[in-house]
Length: 429
Length: 186
Ligand code: SF4
Figure (cartoon, each protein chain N blue to C red):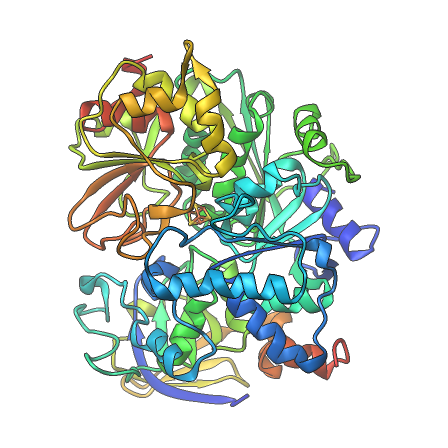
């Protein structure tokens, strides 16, 4: 069996499962946020009625993160509804906005707070819940009805996915990041190339990546339609988890004779920096081919490109440089934001490097990754041409329907911000 | 669950993502407040670029200005319908706008689950690219017992893929109904 099949079998209380089978599984962690939490709670109340009970309060995790720093009253009402619900039910794992506990983007916060336990099942009301799979667990996104069902029963049905395996051989060259790897895959298999399937990442290059980078790979599994992205938990992953949680976990690995829908092999030495052109994450082209495209904005943030390693990469290029277009830096979490002060490159703090280069450093949240209310920082307007470390460039995703968004690695975004047009990071490193 | 669904077709292309179905800026409205949730119907499919809205001609609005409901109740689309975010607001918005069925070549997993588990609408998969055979405004009849689509405007008829193992949930009208009927919850 594959690692995904083994975890699902355990969660279903079976010795084995096969792709295509519909099974009922036990959920270990249910995550929700300000956009989907309120309607989830409402459905739960409606369906389970007066006697509605939460199946396990310890297992429910709530991160307000989407629309936080806005004057939009409906958005603020949603955060208020989370607060009210968490208060009424005494939920221990609520990370309220505008408090010390506030974390920022849920997928980064799940890792930092030690919820990503290898071998477990994590379901979130957010499509990028696949991110957590970087820790060797099964994680996927669902809607409000499914989440409400889990909230009351702790179980959900899933169709066991076929697995696809993506192996990256060789060492990671300095100019390449996990973002380039996943954009290469998307260009090859397209936005529905992994629909209803598991995407398993493997190979020397993948296991040489730190957890931030591995999370970038699994994060964008959904951009190929994948049910989950997964990387076996090696020593690096286990150490990360042990530093943040004292709960037990279980390690699963794919068998040597596990069956795959398909397998892909890449030699990292032969890959180069890429972008996804408007308006689809699979619209891949090499940076060289689109070099020179004039830009009006650059954006470094989100669960894909707003982690510590992303800002470290950006800083490598932005040190002693000035950006030519408005450049927004949105730390994915408050922990990342704090570490911008303490972590250094060539003896200078990242925050100093980024702000000296002229970047606008915003507070942690999803911000303009998904457009958001009109007063959201970094939101695209009119015919903006944006280069961004985020994960989606569908029409209107970052705000204006007329704008164009190029997705790229933090290295490419930083290099392009310095020139004001799309630029290859190799010319800077 | 009605076995025969009839309505006018609204035809779309490939990869209609959830931001096109309901743009993120509208996600702030309550889904449970009857009055307020009508906003979802009003803005359904408002993110589709005009030239790709209502094929093959394009430029056909899904909902007329100042209306809360659409004249079209069956959507016909290409592959990967509903890709993008997990927002259940997407099938909800379509239902609010009066859509009862989507017929697409394929679906993104979360949209499909949400449509079925929430009982919002019936997601059918077509056997061929029907969005090139059907025109916006065509009068359609779908016989769910036989998984057949009849286009009353052109008198053509097409087979649709049977829903398979999720059929009991579709027939029950959603996950909670299904679970109650099967004694899984009270
Ligand atoms: S940062 Fe963007 S992709 Fe990530 S959870 Fe927030 S809105 Fe979704």
